[in-house]
Image (cartoon, rainbow, N blue to C red; front, side):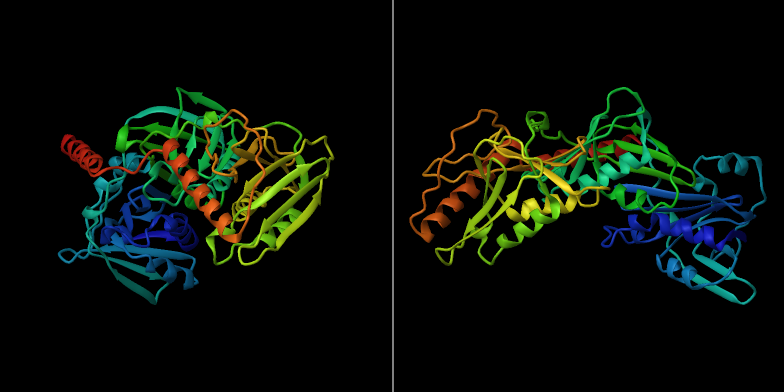
Length: 468
């Protein structure tokens, strides 16, 4: 039997619960792996992309390991007891106990404790003198081993700044499974970048200490774990290990180890996107949100574009209704009143709303700076007074047979006045715009992997497993 404080045990379970997949590819992944070497108790969870392990010292001599379902968390939450006793039960031997040894002491100082424990079939939990529960477990040997790839480089960052940047960028990642690299967040040691091909976020974050170059694509699953840890150190070190499909970033903080499999591939060259630093048009965020309310998405997918026009101290947002000849418009006054030249751009209101929603959690954020048209293919959004955070949104131009929409373009083009004769004409023009924009995105971002690429990746994985 091994004894641990109930509050501590519950914290260990909760810290790594977000890693357990809702739809696991293998039944064992829907479980916690609980391991004891007689001195140290560990709880591990994984979705094969993120490995998370909570570690705590405990009293007792019980040795064993078993996989148990997340139901154990709900049970511990309802029990009002100071201590919890854990006992590993095997069908062949009802106790898997071993005395404290020098080997156990060595393992308790931070190395993997799984190899020293024997597999059990059940886990018995005892609270006080009467409350006893037995969980039927799964074979622990089927649970994936915690990665142990050789470390090649490391970088130390401010913990809060790093996590805040990840949370901010998460809202800009793609949901398209065919573009896997865009489902992660790119980090090069100075900035975090995320894009879905239409909107892009650039969050500056400088390292405290760095060894070797860092260019990695981080999966968003790591955010669910780090954001739920109660107390974090002021700084954390990202240790980058392995290569190819088996490249990981290790994070070790008190009582928690993380191994996050990095997304393999080449992230698009976002350096070609130059965010403008001109004065722009400063407006109140709430007023802008209210103005966008006049241009909500309707049943027709061709009502999703609004015209943003800046002139002197006024920003006009207008759009036409495809079911009638009416036009909705609203005018906002510039907060800082800089000298603006006449400019007009076409943006998707729901995309602008998503950018405002992403930056609304920033402390003391009340105003947004919008820069239209200095670069013809991207509109820049800044949380006013936060120069390290930049957002961009792809623009669309509507004219007679000539449209451009691309993250690559850097040469300004003359503005064209929309020519709309009938409701049918504008729908046809916007259809063409959407098709051209998608074609431009496909040129910039990598195409979906072919069947041949999948076979080659499968062969690499098999070769790696055979080598191990």
